[in-house]
Image 1 (tube, rainbow, N blue to C red):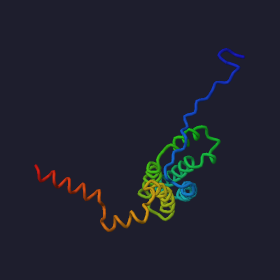
Image 2: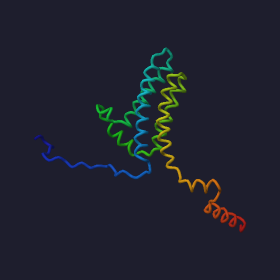
Image 3: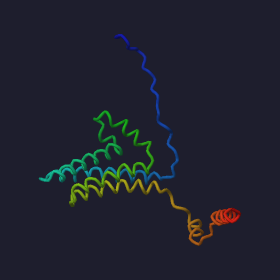
Image 4: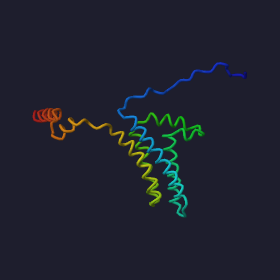
Amino acid sequence: MGQGQSSTPLPTVSNSKPPEDDGITWWCKIGARGVCIAGGLGAVFAGLFRCITFTPLCLVAGIMLMIQGFLVIALEAPCCCQFLDFIQPLARFSENRSPFQKALIYALPAITPLALCFSLTTGMGCILLFAAGAMYGLMALGRKADRQTMMSRARGDEMEMKETLIANEESASVQ
């Protein structure tokens, strides 16, 4: 044994939290992950085809599409990129993000390549990335209310809102 080495392995500290019940069904999570992987692969291939051009802006847009597609695949399916050392901490970081944050991370950067080079190939890649963000955006909205709650809100039977309005009106007339 060399200097500074010990024969007993050090215990590892796990920072992973137990999964919280966020109200999103398992099949919705798997579906969103599948759409993200398909969107990432489609964006990589669309970016590859977009790089076959003579226009410098379209070349930059193609490279951006490929980078964004690879990033989506790395965040959603780190098993595809096991040969890269920095992917596992990145994937753990992604797992702790809320669906709203993932929607912003995937959808907003997809607009940039389309703004640089407006073409069918760039549009298809950007649409695939935007669809991946839209899936997480829908998950961020949450579950819809039950039938009775929606019908009472449509009729205007909100007792809490009426009480709040009456209390606010009374406090305004006193002043």
